[in-house]
Length: 401
Image 1 (cartoon, rainbow, N blue to C red):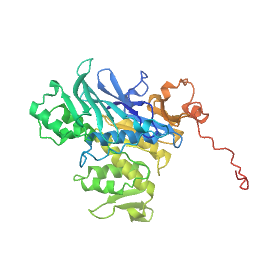
Image 2: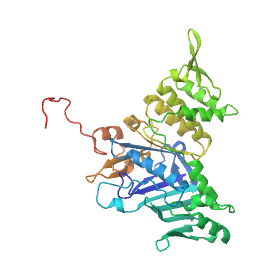
Image 3: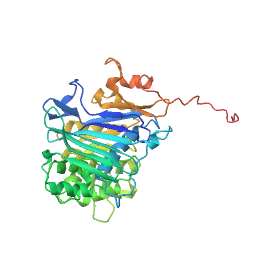
Image 4: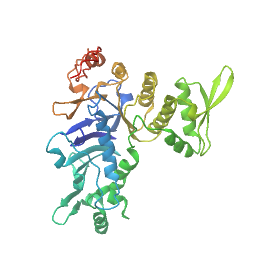
């Protein structure tokens, strides 16, 4: 599970911004909303980011998605660019390095992976583990400008043979992480296996608001050999008050939905269904993965194409039934969640832009809002972040400046 993620010099983010899943001391809904990854350490299962348009909330998710990609990236050659977009609203940041760092727990052990890079190469990469109160460095990779290569120091705690270390170092070209180099090296098992698997299998690609989920639905149903996913989808759609009584699917063909009406059972192909129905069907598969596997899922504008009650139901089901170590981070414009009693205050974040055009990330619990005041009302009144000022609704179309 992720404890914290920090970003510096990425898109609208200039100075370091951090998002944390570490729960506050508040015990409200602790059993439903948190997971104890180690004795005394509880992490949040859900994070919600609010912000005005162009405030940078999506860039927080894009940074997480980029970091996942960067760790696993397999370039075709050492000159392939890393595709980083730095902060561009000043005269310095474009020439400076970007930095990202993630703190996470695996099997009760805390890890921190930190990477410094630009579009051409990785300059520093460090992985540490906390086997005690003090960190143990598992490897440290530095860029040697003189010979244009990476030098790596491996810890004996990894248990890698010297020949394995040399093999990984040889595969660590300038634009490939040590973990990605490890994944293509034929070496013995170590802690690197579970760290790489965390980024490659646990962290999921971002789900964008305009993403067409039909291919995802088809791929999932194709692998659903025992029908568990299909049963879950149907049960979830029924519970969400859709009048769908069944689903039929054959490989290579559209999904067919059985609708029960007073006139009997009628069949509609998926291209006849609403965007909201297909979106919610895809979300039901995401939910099934969250509940039955250890996944970290990020969704931008999670409310896209679905009614608020369905969004609320989706989040409630995840929080109440999730007994593993899955986490969900979403952005949304729907401020109704600020009024819900199943949402903890430490789960809520806001993005805002300062006068230099850079994104600042703020946690609701750090904004000094009294527990007696409603976050919903405080947000509406502009007490938490600056709301967009849209001016008068009356326009003089003949007034041109």
